[in-house]
Length: 408
Image (cartoon, rainbow, N blue to C red; front, side, top):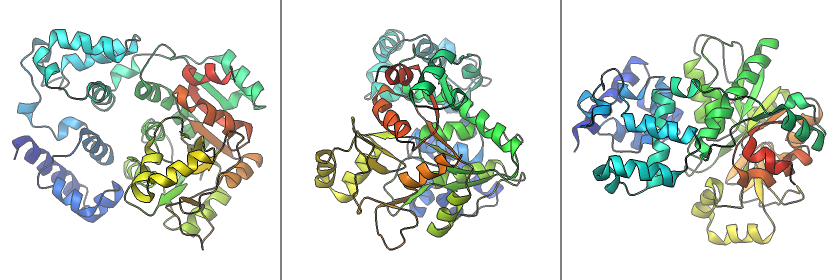
């Protein structure tokens, strides 16, 4: 056993006791099996992503869980570890990425400066992404020091193309940045600004939340104390433990914990309540999926239902999904009842139950704000289909998608 793993486990337990929560309550909020969480309180040997998820839930920095002896390295850059627990090379890697460097250039630099550390790394892309995530969670002021403007001309051009008001489109200038995880961090504050604005204008605002890292970062950007009297509800839920790393229910649990005392609530615990909440909703924030490359949803379907189902989906022309519902290049829903069914279709059993495409379209047609938030050129076709067919009427993205949308 590692001493650091035991230290982290003890620290997690201390935070839970301090919050006066049971192990079961925390496991449920983290969308993690109880036995897995209980193991984390004995010795933490899980991934950095799970530790960051714990940090987010308890609203504490990652150094809360890391033993002081593990916060330093033998490099001069890290000599001030007590005031800056992040190694200097992570800050350098982040700054290189912000200037447009890609992974090959970044890792070449790292290998020259830290050859022994570089030789021990088996997944270069994951190592670099973890550096970005450590900056995001442990030293967010570095990201905040960069100011990204909106591309107004592109916003107006996209709005015209999809017959939407230009104020419902946000395109953030970040086309020179190669890393999608950073572009997610850059566009997220604009989504948070919309939430704060709408909640200020209408007390009791009801917002539906979907899955995804971009949605998680948008919620991160809503500062405690900025809003009150808001109701959140999930747009989907699954019948399996195999799910997206950040589910809508886990995001809402974390947000409610952080906003305790401000009247931010959720009254949805079952399918009927989710359905009724959508009827009353003012807005919904969703990521969007694509089947142009293998994604989390595809892997979930394959692991539970098998390869043949995924192959059949591709044969029937599935190009993407919106809130788990599958569609083809024309925007027609491709029905796989064993995979996904509408919330409200109480007799249908499926891997996923979610608010359907027609429900989203009806809400958008009646003035509800249905927001797509996402980056990455591979999502362009899915976003274009969703906007063209009226499944969404707001968009937050960056130049990587905007330029492609304007070429379609």
